[in-house]
Amino acid sequence: MKLKGKVALVTGSSTGIGEAVAKLYAKEGADVIVCSSNTVEEGKKVAEYLTSLGTNSIYIQADLTKEEDIKRMFEEIENKYGKLDILVNNMGKTCNIAFKDITKETMQYDIDVNFTSAVLCSKYAVELMKDEGWIINTSSIRGTDVCGRPGIMGYCAGKSAMNSFTKQLAIELSPKIFVNSVAPGFVHTRYMDKMGEEIKKSWLSNIPINKFIAPEEIAEVYLMLATSRIFAGSIITPDGGYTILNR
Image 1 (cartoon, rainbow, N blue to C red):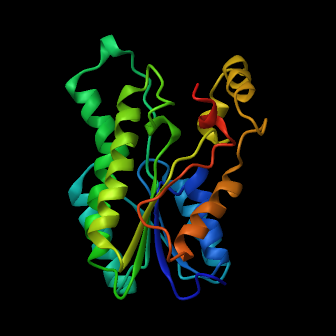
Image 2 (image 1 turned 120 degrees about the vertical axis):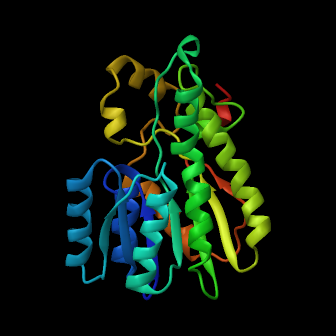
């Protein structure tokens, strides 16, 4: 029970990586706030499962591209728990848009979803963190210098900004609050299920460990960062070796 007595908010936790992290945190004793925008029924089911484990967990629907929704969410958290120990900024979305079709609106949406939401959630979370806290940002290999991909330029830019933000916030908040980022490689989520077999074979051929990562496997990295007091501003890259090939 590594997280007994802790309160954790995991955004984007109705499916995929966020769901796996929320479930692992609850199994380790944390009370978890499950948050999503559109997948409400899935989020409620996750929260019900966490409650069945004996935790005091809840679901909150919030559109994290809207600051008023973020403020409301943190007010609910403060009213119910009086504190927050762990924030996982996991909300993100990949929008496939060709460069010729990019507009100011599409680019702003990508940045808001994949970056600005994390900045604002961190701002309000810090106010609820008492003696110490942990902020874990979900970045991506697409935010690194070697793994960007045409067609998702806004997503790559947002995740690159997330990496920089992680380092700067760690400087700002250390040693009280430990801020780090996880930059996953190819994780087998609902998004991957939408991809064609040929592109999945292409990805797999460039992963040295020759397999996609399960959400439950990558959740272990988030648990490690939520219990460690030695990482600050680190970008952890669980990608099966993909980025070492520089392709």
